[in-house]
Image (cartoon, rainbow, N blue to C red):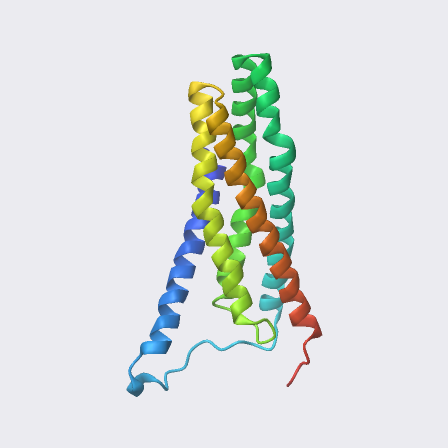
Length: 201
């Protein structure tokens, strides 16, 4: 595995840990003993360079992911079919070349998930928490769907092109693309909420 892939998977792992910890914290706040109810927790801020920076980074990487998801669906993956018709060697050469270069362009997807995970810990008072949780949930779904596409690609590179595996690759990436689009739209709603909501000091 290349170092770039390790960085990508490390970011996804950190995101999942942040999310799990935030879930545990939220449950603790709901069910904690009454005697500990006065313990202070991190409260949403009116706005700061950190929270606004996280928000803008989340939006930028979300729409990058939208473009990458649909670009793969309509451009990169259909080339597999074209090259498989030429020869198995052409198919494998393209597949290996694609996977050897794709790690770098995957990094912003990891940044996107990690950014919204951090937003659970550095909340913004003008961005609804339920919106952040919705985006985080979609990021978790993206991670859960990705192995279907990855395994289909790896198996085809090892065994040759397969209509069944190609169909699995396309539907799983289609789901990812829809998830990315939903994240992108929600991120725009978060930005709108941040800069159009009345500010109180």
